[in-house]
Length: 287
Image (cartoon, rainbow, N blue to C red):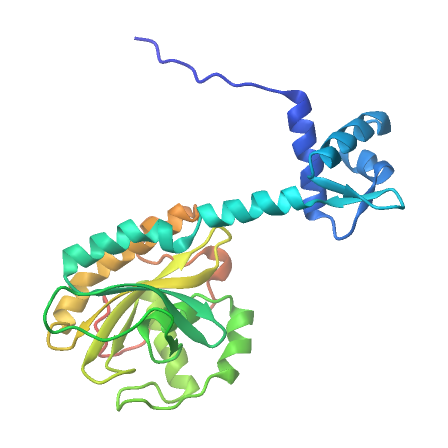
């Protein structure tokens, strides 16, 4: 049975109008009709007709000098798109699945400056569970959710952030120096996840994985957290594939399309530092 070919519709005028809007998206300042004609390769008369229609619909504004810039309708569409890609809404089914499969507390965090902030939390159904709250901020250097965001920062951004971190030991296990953190981050990059082994709070352990957005940046993470008595090294290793799978699925939902998401080393190529070597450690990372 022959396969049905998907029909395509080439509406030339619509495509031209959208291409004109894309010119404004990449322009650093407003554009005149002549400049738009030069950039688009269209006649000035044709460009003028498009500009009049786009302005009447609110997608462009025209100044008194005859130059055009994006209008409020573009802002409204952009805001609607952002709302429809809301990371909390998109992540929730995967967080719920993790919560049901692990029976541990699940966190979704985003980076805010030098902290990671909980934006979603699903409690463990177990009687013994951890305390945390949405909106709370935790340090980057001694939490799984924070360390995984540090590990996947572009090198230049990481170099600017590291000197600002305060290496205050919150527990006996907290990372206490820049060198120790850098060694630790190499291991995180190698394995694709980070662990908090009672580094932020005594008796609490966590495993976290990065979430990439459409641009390949990591400004969010997802984690499984529980009491140390339930989070042995063996169990943390068992949880690693689950948290990594959830992070990859959320990343795809946010528009990230890297072909290497299926690999254990899930570093986006443009963010992979050079000269990264593995280090020996007693952390529960994959060998």
